[in-house]
Amino acid sequence: MTQPIEAARGDEVTVTTKTSGTVQTEEVESNGDSPVDETGTEAKETFDNEVAIRPNAAEEVPDLLKKVTSLAAVYADNASEDARAEFLDTARSLVYALETPREAMIRYCWSQSTIYAAIETCVELGVFPVLSKDDTPKTAAQLAEATNADPALLARLLKHLATMGVIKETGPDTYRRNGFSSSLSAKRYSDAYPCMTGCITFGMTSLPAHLKKTGYRNPSDGRNSAFQDGYRTSSHFFEFLKDHPVHAEQFNNHMTAYHQGRPSWMDVGFYPVPSLTEGLDLDADDVLLVDVGGGVGHDLSEFRRKWPSLPGRLVLQDLGEVIEQAKAMNQAAGRDIEATVHDFFTEQPIKGARAYYMHSVLHDWADADCRRILSNLVPALKRGHSKILINENVIPSTNAYWETTSLDIIMMADFASQERTEKQWHALVESVGLKIVKIWTARRGVESLIECELA
Image 1 (cartoon, rainbow, N blue to C red):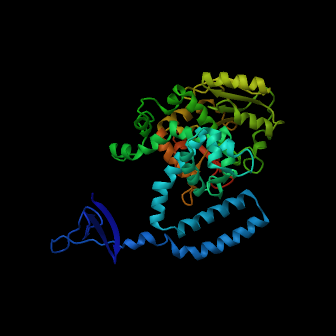
Image 2 (cartoon, rainbow, N blue to C red):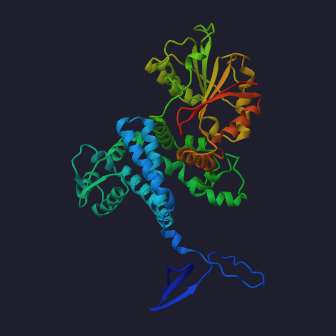
Image 3 (cartoon, rainbow, N blue to C red):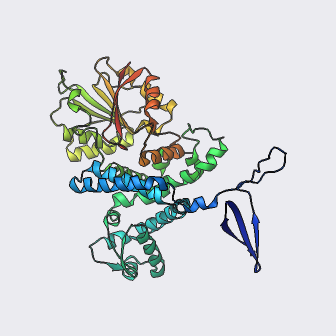
């Protein structure tokens, strides 16, 4: 059997091949296309192979260390979310600067896929609820007995979970819960893993081949995307969820966990919510807010809870099956929300509302579909009175946040849509006769509120 062994030799890449006890070394080009020099002969390329075992950005380490130390002191004095987020970002930058290209390659290619598989398997086995009952360390054998798992298998999975910080190792084959593993004992959080496998990940793994097949064109057809290739379906993502209700439930749980703990546009200091009624003679019969494509009404419930004294009706709109569910939930909770059936690809039936609100609707659709959605709202707007409030990510031109860019690639693969930059939002909104009044943002990486009105 032939086994290649790569070695670094000066500034050249060499491949050492071991065959039947003999060792042969040959110099190879760094890629398949050999350049030609001025004489027409093939020129040999060289590559500094040692770059792969040097830190990615050693020159940045001293300044990052100083910043980490400074932020540690700030966080110790003021453990606010903003301080924690900046501290974490800087610490992550320090890790990336110290990490070598080889280590980064192995982390991306090995650790991310394997830890995902290990977590999802332990979610299915029910390991995390058992481990998280209390702080008492538990052996792999005890966890295997409690979950009816093969002890040898579970021991291997647990050891990998510990190396990746999912659980805490306290001794040989002995582990204790931490915050992360404790969260995985709740379905709201653990559902993320089977959800991704069931309706997201295969679209992602199919994306490179799909883009190659389409000539590397920006995807724009939600029925002909990497999602259809990966899941071998002709259905749009939302149709697929309708046909797979277990994945739909997991997806909804994942979305609620994603939004947890993030600033809301309804919070004091984000968007001036009282301005929606100030100077206006609104009464109980006037429509204050229409939540277009608002699901079962979580956002309107939050709005009424945080601003109970604001006058006007709150109207929820979505498709029939969703609205039936919303009506039952609203009735059970005694919510003052009107749930009505409406398809946002048709003209808006409620005219002259103070605000038409959409939360994470437009990022599901390519520009052409978004123009249809927005155009169906325009005739309902009353000039000088009505607003459109779009609650979405706005990717900055520099210093974008990794969660937002990750979601953008997910939208590319599974929806043929995107998270948009400020420039793209302006172009989209203005293309249907609207203008952006202001983009309200509370913190980096958090969804903004894009306030629009008739141009």
